[in-house]
Each structure stands twice: as C-alpha cells, then as structure tokens.
Image 1 (cartoon, rainbow, N blue to C red):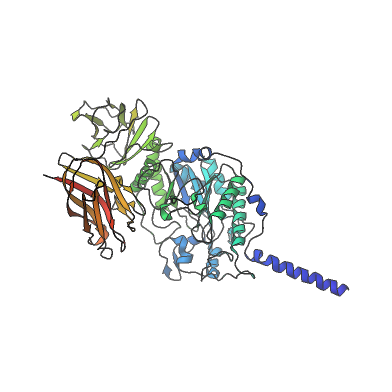
Image 2 (image 1 turned 90 degrees about the vertical axis):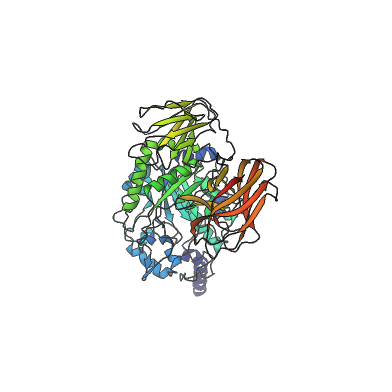
Length: 624
C-alpha cells in the first residue's frame, strides 16, 4: 500500500511537472486572465495627452545586446539597422546568447543621459525595455533572458527613470511585441534553435507572457508612455491589442499608448488605415514626416540621426544639426511630435556625434523654443520658405534659408500684426504692402506692422548673426484670420505647383531627396496628386519636374485640369537615370474650356510596373 501510494505520488508529480513545463521553458506563467478584462478608470484622451501635445520633442533610446556586435558578426556586417542583426544575419539563438556575457555597461551614467536629453531641449525620453530579440533591460520575474544574465546584473531602467524625473523629463518605455527568441512566439524563425516546449509553440501562452512583462514594467517604473512595436505579424490580432491596452489603462489610467498596440498602422507611414479599428492615443510615422498637417490626429515621427537605431560601428551617415532642426520645425509645423533617436554603445556611452547634434538643437531651442513648445500646426497652406507654427495670437515662421532681399508672402493673413525676428539684438525686417515698401525698422529689435492690406510681404534684409533657421514671430492683434487664395497665374503667365502643396491619395507621399520635397512611393494606380488652383480659360503648356529609374520607366501618366477629361494630357515616363536625378520634361499642351476654381490632378493610367515616378512639381504656362 505504501509502495502504491508512493508510485501514485510520483506519477502526480511527473504529470504536474509536464503540465507546468511549457510555461517554465517559455519563461512564462499563467496569470489570472480576468484581471486584464477589468475596466480602467476613465481619463479623457485630452487630459492624458495634454503634456504630450505641449512637449513636441523627445529622445528615443535604442539599447540592448545588439550594441555588443554593433552591426558585425562572424566577419559580416548586417544590412540595415544594427538592432535587426539577429534576423539580418540569421544568428541562432544559441550564438546570440553569447553576447550577454559581453554586455557590461560600466560607463553607463543615467544622470548624464538625462542631462543630455534636458540640455537638448527634449521634454521626454523613451527607452527600449526590450527589442525584437526579446532581451530585457530589467530583472523580469517571468524570464531569465534579461540583464541578470550579463555581468552587470542589475536593473538598467529604474536609475534612468529616476534621473529623467529629477531633470523634469517624462519617462516612457518601448516594448516589442515581436520576439525572435521566445519558444512560444510564432511565426518561428528557422534559425531559432531555442528548444520548443513539449506541447509545441502556443501563441496564447506567449500573449500571457507579454501581459505579465507589461504589468511588471508599468508597476515597477510608472512610465508616462508605453511605446509598442513589432505588432505587424499575423499572429498578433486586434483582440490581443485591445486586451493589452486595457491592461495598461487599468494599471495606470493616464498612461499614453501608441497605435502599434493594435493592427491599424499603415506601414512606415505610421498613420491609421481607414476602415481598420485603431487603438492607442497617437500615430507613429517612422523615418518620415507626413506630407501635410492632420487636424484632430495626434502623431509622432520617430527618426534616427544616422541610418541605424541601435549603435552600429560602421554607420557614419550622420545628418547635420541644421537638418535635424529643420525636421523639428517641419514636424511641429504640421502639428506632430519629434522623437529623435540615440543608440548607446555596449559600454553605456551615447556616441559623441549624437551629443554634438543634440547640443546644437538645445542651443537653438533656448532661443526659439517658444516657437515649438505648446504650439499647434501653422495656419498656412504652403510654406515654401520653411515651416510655421501657431500659439494663440502668435504665428512663428521658421526660415530655412534666410536670403537678403527674399520676400515672404503673407497675403493670406488678414489680421493686423507686428513682426519681429525672435533672437535678441539681430534681424531686420521691412514690410511691403500693395507693392509699396513702408519705412522699415532700422533697430535690430524694431517692429513692422500692417493693417489688413490686399497684399503683404515681409522683406528679409540683414540676416541674424550666428544662427541658422531664424524664426520670425507675427504677433496678431486678434486670433489670426487666414484667407488662403488659390494659386493662380503669375505675372509671366505661369503657375508652378510644388509637391509639398499636393493633396495625396496613398500610397503616394512626400519625401525629401537632396533636401527638396517630391512625391514618391507612387506604386499604385489609385495614387493621385491634386492641387486646387484658380485658372482662366485658355491653352496651357504642361511641364513636369520628375525622376525615374531605367527599371521603372515606361509607365503612363495623365495630367488633368478640372473634371473634364478633354482638358487632359497623357505621357510616358522615361528614365532620368535614377530616383534622385530630376529633369524637367515638356508633356505637351491642353485646353481649359471653362476657367475658374479647378483641380489639377496627376495620376497613373493603367497598372504600374514598379513606381510611376518621383514628382517635384507641375508647371502650367499660358500659351498666347
């Protein structure tokens, strides 16, 4: 009897062990799922987003084991960013784990990192708590694949959270849903040699693991932002995102969550796809800026300073500080936030090239920060001279290329205003009203004014000393009233329509090549570019400034004015030698039978083989 009971006891232990084994092998546990369905305390989106909309500028930090190889493994350099090296070079998990003993960030100084962010003018910091390799920068209770497997053996996140808050910065955590290492994650990579659980990979068990880790980091670090990523594979569904978002809001009702918790993101453009259920508080364009403002939509462009998010030893393709400042202005001018990335080394140092550029941005923001923080999108439809933001009765003009004698057309602004360059002791402006120059200010801090003229232009005279990207403040006597005229023929009888002013149907979008905007990603016949214009009846010559590769050449396009197909002309796109080699081509002539307020539309005819073209501008010239 004793023997039989012993055998029964042993059998029960073995069965229990087998039942528990999958969770143990996966580094997971089975939490009480009911708590994830509990309703969150209600906090309105406007209340939780208020500080974020004021902030406009944040620092992204990509840091993890991938900083050890820094883009190189077994004599090979990975293509693309370094944090993808595990997938790019198909490194087996057993080999990738060997980086853990080499990750010992003895130069990590979280207080210095927070000061760098603060001095750069950033208002918040978001760091990768774990990336797609699944490695955690904290001591996770549900996984051994974390910082405790390294010589460092202590939490990396809490000291940074405390340092950021000491500097007055908000703190956020990035968390990857995708996990190349986890035994229960599917689709499983062929090079993942981690042992499978005895009952095979179970994605539902992986979801429980994700929920457990998200609960850990919210509870331990009280983040202001949970920045999800890696949601694009088919195994992650909208229902998973709903449950995860509900968990975040239950644990911290005022937490801000991005749209990548769900399935609505439209690829790298980061905006939500029409007709797809969206989750989260803000959209996440990646490495790009939307072509125009998005009223009523909160969005944040995350971008790198070079080409890699994580530290990559061979990546020397650094953007200069002026370009980074221009990007900040452009994003703020369209109503978005700028999350600018740094990739620290495995030793825990932010690269000096990053620090140098952040320092320059901070110096600029100390002078011109009022034109960025707390502003909304600028009121003008077109800003060929740079970007504009608005705050109350003030409009801020960010001049990307200050040229003496250049004029800024402000005819659309119908409210009385005074203008000044914001830097103390520099900058002189004169006003041109109805083509008659008024007596301009002669002191550096003097102001010019106008009283609702038919046509108003600012004349840029002496450029400010020692700064790039100067800012002009237009202080209006009332809430600015904008009446945008439609583009019309100039004195020479021509009208040029730039890419930046077009209304685009996706997937076409504005990108910059050589610093100039063009319409690219024209890969669908559904994509169109539309400009609203004012044209008289007459005959017009049509020219396009475009580029195209030899491989994509041969597609047919059409330019149409108005709704009448008779006022249209078609052509075949020929190679210019590359997407970055722009040429002006004369398409031909078309006739506008009935003038007035019209739309100029450019689109493809028939199916596309490759991309249609990159388009910088359309020019219509009246034929006399």
